[in-house]
Image (tube, rainbow, N blue to C red; front, side, top):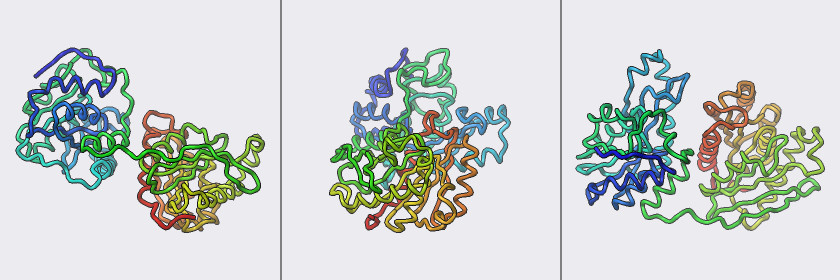
Length: 439
């Protein structure tokens, strides 16, 4: 085991410093396996330094139901499950609670595995030295599960390597790895993030980029259109911002909620994610500056819906968006407007996503006419809106799902919750936007 003192700027620096301790493992028989998502930037540096292929081992922590940041175990690919009996006993977790948590995390694990692998099989580990890399060790449950998975896949030698871990980490993990490598084991140790100046969440798009670069693939295609524009609708001209990446697979038009605009940081966050995954976006203002103070118009769902319909139809006249399958993303009252447009345009709308929306404001008649597959995303802490979405969903006659984001309030301001909204929306649009659904 190798140990030095540590503090890191970010995961990239941590990876470089960890790689400096792993030079003796370089060679054609070595594979680096990362734990997504935070372990991927660290492992990418290790793989590059060793000239080794980079793969992933998807693991999901099983959090205590009322304290999800406390791990009571982990699950991984190939049906691996590791439980911490002591944590479960002290937390009083029942078998039913464990099954419920595991069912939810298993679904997310399978989704991430499909997305990260993109149809590619896992790397062949038979007879090879496998370096399992994460951004740190806390309880060790996820690392233990990963080591068991790579061993089951035929690894001849398993090396667990991390930038930072508690001083007793070797006592916990010696039996699952042939070698343990760590940059530093500081004391006291409370959380991995305290040893990083930047410990921001690693997004799916960054994971995909790093994996693509490790395979020697091209970086994502550049954006070919990124500009402000005005769009005619119902006798007024509405300001918007159009972004179209190269080889766009579809376009998503955003309908903002009351008191918001095309500059909404939350919708821009989601739009940026969609752009990076190959979808064009149009963020625009449903009302003019002169109309915004009029509260009657702010909540006039019929007016907002008719304007969104006019804007969606206008896209078919623009060279940059002509022929692209159409999706709609609505927030708050904008969700009702999106459903109005979906009902009016019928099969021309390929998919609808609502974030913290009020689909109930569209009314039963409109909801019954929507044919586009509809995803309703709500925060787990937004009880009233969950109830309204559940009731509205019973009126829909189309394919629909209700996704509840854990620990999220109405505005999704909690850490990581908006990233989850982006992932859910991106998956929904990529699955449902098909050629031939343009307005």
